[in-house]
Amino acid sequence: MRVLAELPHPSFKISLFGMNQKFIIKFEQGTLEQSYKIAEADIIGGVNGVFELLDEAFLKAVEDNFQNMRNQFIEAYKRYEL
Image (cartoon, rainbow, N blue to C red):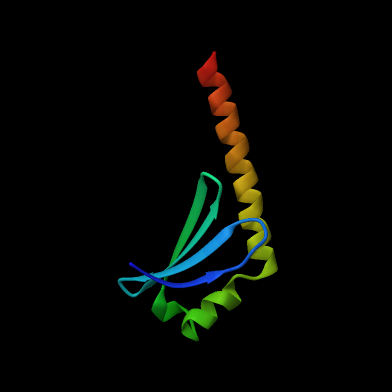
């Protein structure tokens, strides 16, 4: 797996990887991580096409997913402590 690019974002780290004719888009926020895979053949324009895919609506959904993941983990941890 090779790193193709990193995108700045104020809320999380965005990394783009290439592996086996797939793009892997990885989002990291603290201890949480989300990743998405898409075939290179499905993206027009290569790396720039992936950047176009990451529009504001998608990035907002990623941020909401992180909040939901964090809430779920906190709730699970509270049950674990009992």
